[in-house]
Length: 188
Image (cartoon, rainbow, N blue to C red; front, side, top):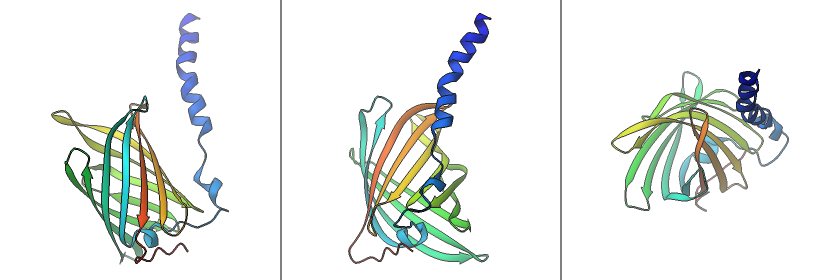
């Protein structure tokens, strides 16, 4: 009996978390509508930070992003070339290949992403989930990202990602994207 109560107490927080997630379809009727292919086409700048699970800011960074859209086997494909510069001077590049497999449903790959990323957009929101091979000490670890992006206006996108390992929260990434005034950010 004691083991059953202990197991129930351990599982209770996970049950609460799994019940509290808002589905991306909740935002379907809201505007502006996010089309990531249109938003990220051209040049975009981003600024962000990683906070550990206590909320302490560990790293800050800037990202220069160049996006191009093409057709692959009748599907739209977005190539995102992301150039990161961290506050300690470290530089990193990530190139995403994101394919729209159905209207506002996406899969994606990148060199440090394990397997495929999966996402769905509705209204101004996109929920994007993937496993990242993250450099750590003298090696790397695999962590899961649960990204939520929200289009504020034609030029501004806010991203908040929860980072977990073995189901436990490791930290969060907060990121702000901004299109230049000269770039078109169609939000059809």
